[in-house]
Every structure is written in C-alpha cells, then in structure tokens.
Length: 130
View 1: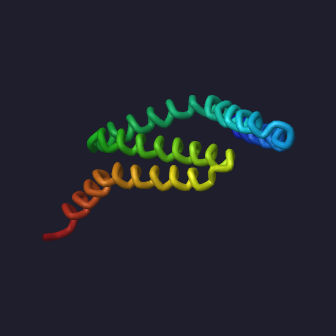
View 2: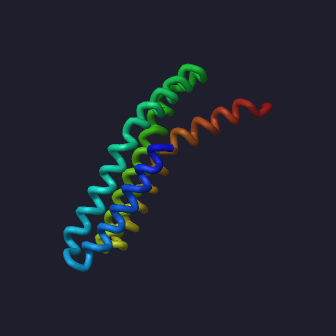
C-alpha cells in the first residue's frame, strides 16, 4: 500500500508542477512530466523481479515451452513502452504521432502474439475428439 501512495503522490505533484510551469515555460513542463514518469518507473522496477520469478515457477509447473513465456513478457513490455511513449507524444501536443505509436505497437504485439495463438489452437485441437 505504501508504494501506491508514493506513485499517486508523485503523479499528482508532477501534474501540478506541469500545470504551474506550462504557462511560464512550456518546454520545461514537458521535462517535468517525463521526469515524474521516470521516477515512478524506478519505484516499481523491483516488482518486475517478482513477476519474472513467478513466471519461472509457472514454467516449471506447466512444462510448457519457456519461449512462449518469454514472448509473453516481451509483449507485455512492448505494451507498457508503447503506452508510455504515446503518453509523452500526447503530452507534447503530438496527438497524431501518439496515435501512430499506439497503432504501430498494437500491430507489433499482434504479430508477436501469433505463435501463442497458434500454440493455444494446437492444444485445443488436440483435446477435441477426432
């Protein structure tokens, strides 16, 4: 619960700081927003190790191909990076560019997800009676 209060506090302080600074120095307000986002990312980075450990445990329990889990983690990471980048684009007033970043990220995620979808369909087809 302590971490969420830190995240919310930094987010609100960053928003207020950018609102105050933007009329005076709009170029500097962008850097304040990026810095606030980076601070939040550094706060949550330790949680990723817990997620990776859990995925390793799941791989051990299920015996499924570990490449699928690696691919899943890459897809999740791409999703977060794309969302963060699009947010920065939107904050700088480049909404159209932010939309294109999101579209590109979604297409990359769809292509990367194809082996997972294929594997799931193979498992389902193996379960159906012939």
